[in-house]
Each structure stands twice: as structure tokens, then as C-alpha cells.
Image 1 (tube, rainbow, N blue to C red):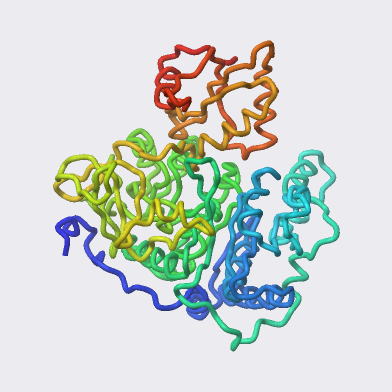
Image 2 (cartoon, rainbow, N blue to C red):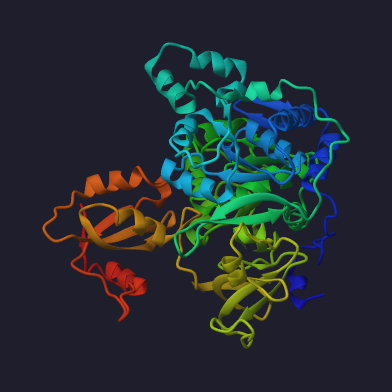
Length: 562
């Protein structure tokens, strides 16, 4: 037993039982034990575990009849909704692979992903289908299954949306749009359940591909196996030791296409027979209404969400005394946000650490007095770490000195889809995952992030590759050079900022350039600031010195856009 395990919450084991079954067995066991209790709640409508299992089996049969087989990739382009939960497990039931996508991605962003994974079948929010149809003929989409979110609203909510009022018409347009020439979600469920003897996947099979930004600006598909995701759910269950099976309410406020949202909402919550309250977006008025009716007992989110909810609870005088387990991840948690959250009456807000390649959670602060705010905590059960020299991963650093964090454990991914070179950069001999984060570890074993080796911007919990944003801006006729960096932001951790050099003889309309970016990038990637500069610092080989650009922008030595 490692010395740092003395600081675990009482009852948390040093190791978990490594899964030998797939996620198909996880959901089958959850359905059997959950029975008629509520599995999913969505805008007032509930689905029991028994109903959830039946719909998964019907959707699996529908996909089988469309030709989906083991090993096929099936793309999900969906917000959080009950259909997402059902589709996720229906795809896995066939031994096929779920490929998660942000449903707000532009046609350009979707193109690269579909070129890479080549999914032939797509289950998509009807709002996103037009962007899928903009893909060129070399993208091999054969079947699109359209999902209408409002189908899973309560009948009173659907009736209200039919009222001929301008605000409701605008809301309907944001939620759904008519589409033709597609298979509907109802069509998919219009089948008998799949036969019980149909082959199931194994624990080692790839379950999910989630794309994560790389320093090259080209997203890479992290392959997470059934065993990776099942193990991380069990590790979370061990860490959240006080959770009671069948008695918890978990809020799905993080998107399921985000690794943390997927693990908390789609595997962990269902594994413990929790009631999963689903929100398609982080819509504060909707969440406030739900907090008054059905507050969460377990809430995992990113710091900006905790900050916003703390402010809303203060404004509406809501006390969250029943919210016992609160986990913050994906970005650094400030003491100000932690203190504001504690005023809601909820349990202590603890910080954890993970990355997509670790399914995603690897370290966390204990839900006990031993926690150390400002650190990312201790290695999870069955997880080991070491700190190595930044330039030579074969050399461990001396105790107390900073080094690159390496992780090993059953949650570590199998590699990147069709990308052995990038895989070799992060999966090192001995099964170690190189995180790219520079950390220190104190005498008690608690880990603190002190820097980042990877050239990534983390804004609101999402990774942004500067190179991807730069590639888009450079296609604008008025731009001759650009550097994109992350600058500190009080609410989102970092904000995306672009230092732009205008081409000789050209005039640049900053508002038009921002609109140009919005048409080609997801909203969180669009620079919040566009600063015009005369030139950019570069190496002798012409490579931009991003660190110097960042310091110049922080010092205010460039001309800020209005």
C-alpha cells in the first residue's frame, strides 16, 4: 500500500476489481437491478431502467437491420438527451464503435473527423443534419438517423411549444427543424428487441472514439475500450465512497461527447442505478427550475459551471444541502469559486484531474478532511504515477522537483485511431501515458500542476489547439500571419486570443474576421480577442515563439481590437 493511500477517504480501497465484462454487461446489470425506478429524466419526462433496456435492444436491432456490424464506427452528433443514452448502448450492443461529436461543430470541423473515422451511419440531431449534408461526396455517409429532441419532452412541454407565440416559435427553431430523406429515430425503435444470443463485444474491444486536440491542430481519435471506461466508472465509484446505489440523483450538465461527461453520465451514473437528470445545454434558467424540484446529490462539472450555479443559488436563495458529492475537473479550480460554492450549502467541492486518454479521471482530492485545495489530489485506486524529466522520460526526477506526469492504470487508452506515430509519442514502454503536464508531488503524495508541456489552450474545460485556429485565420485574404495563445480569464480559465498581422495594402475588419472564424470553428474556439500587431517573434527557422507572443499580449504591448 502506497503511503499516500493513508490520506484516502476512509473505506476507499487501494485497488478496484478490474472489469472482465464489457459495457453491455454494465447496462444489462443496471437494467436488471434498476427495474421500474427512474433511469433518465428529461424536461419532466422520465424513463425507467426497464424501459431504457428495452429501447436499447430495439435500437440495436434497428441498427443491425441497417447493416451495422461489430467493429463498424457509428457517429453520434447529438446533444445530451435520452436518445443519446439509448443510441450509445445500442451501438455497443452490436460490438460497433461509438464516435462522439460536438453537435455544434461546423461543416468544416465535421469533415476532418468523418474523413478520419469513415463512419457510414450517423445518428444526428435534426438541427445538425444540414451540416452533415454539406460534406463532399468522398465522405462515405450512407444513412442518417434523425433525432428530434422534443419527442422526449413531457406532453405538457410539447403542447406548450405548439402555442403560436413568437418566443416559442424561436425556441422551436433552436430545438428542432424538419428534415426529409432520412431514417427517423422512431423508425429505428420500430423493431422487436435484438435476440439475446446476438454476439456481444469483449472487454478489450474499442467502445468509443473521442477526438481530442493535438498540438498540430489536427484532432486525434482516442480509442477507449470497454475495459477502460468500465474501469474508470468503478474507480469513480470507489472514490465517491458515500454514494448509495439506487438513491442518487446525478446531473448531466457536461456534454456526453466530453470524456468527463461521458464517464459520469453514461457509465458511472447508470452503473449505480442513479437518476440521471439530463440537460441538452448549460441553460441556467432550466437548471435553476430543476434545482428547486429535483436537486442533484452528485454533481460533476467544470469550474465555470460551479461559479454560475453558485451565483444563481445566491440570487434565488436556493440551498443545496442535499448535494453531497461535488467534483470539479477539466481545468484549474480557483479558491474564489470553491468558496462561493460552499455558500450554497452543498458538500465540499473537490478538484480532480484527468484527460481523454485516461477515460478520463486519474487523480482526485479525497472527499475527506485530508484533501488539499489547490492540488489535483492523489492517484485513484489502481492508478500509479511517476514524475520524469521533461526531455527524457526514462529518468525520474528527484522528490520535490517538477517533472512530466506519467500515468498507468486500467483506464489508460489503447491509442489513437489510425495514428501510430502520435500514439507512440504518448504511450510509453511499460504502459505509461505521458500527459504533457508538468507537476510536483509533495511528501504526502498530493500532486500540483505547475506548467504544461503541450501547446494547448483550455477554455471552459475544452481543449483548443492554437494551430487549428491559426490555420483558419490564415485563410482570410487580409491576414498574412497569426499566432493564437491562451490568456488568463477569471471565469473560463483561459480565453483564446489571436495576434494578427495584416497583409500589406489590406484593411482588416475585425468584426468580419470574427464572423469568418465563427463560420468555420465551434464557438469555444473562436478568439475572444483579436489584437493587431506589426510582426510576430520567431525563431531563426521561422517558427513563431508562442511564449513570447503570450508575454507581449499580457504586457499590453500590442494594439487591442475594439
